[in-house]
Length: 171
Image (cartoon, rainbow, N blue to C red; front, side):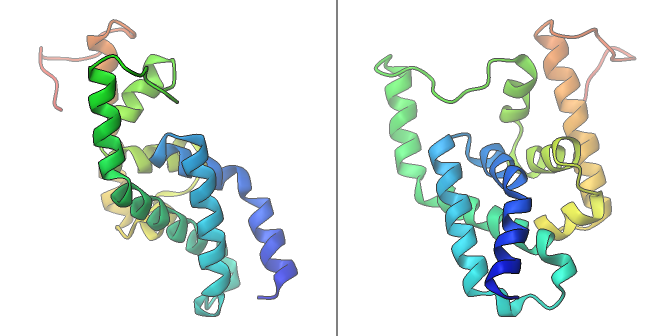
């Protein structure tokens, strides 16, 4: 893949790239850095791409891995920030202000990422499986489990009508 085709492909999906990075990192600067780092890694390893038709899924997988690497490197900073927030020295930053996005953010990565990639970015369950290294069946189950947790969380907060039957909720 030459430079022009690479840049054209990346620019065509930049909104999705940023959205996925924000879904994982929840910080604008970190998301922008992760996208940029993923672009560098993808460019360096473009010879490993066997099928240019699979570029978007291949690149998304690089981005997801880059975001996860970033999270691992930033763990100490997050702990410090949480301590500072508990002590009231800083306010919560970069947090969505709707109940839905707060509930989505509260989901573990393994549930949050499939939901965001499926509902917000329009990837198929099979594509999400390739991005996350899971089967389409696993992705489908994770999306179902995430929906159940979101429904329960929103019902508990009074943000939505109670839809539970039989008096219980799985979660």
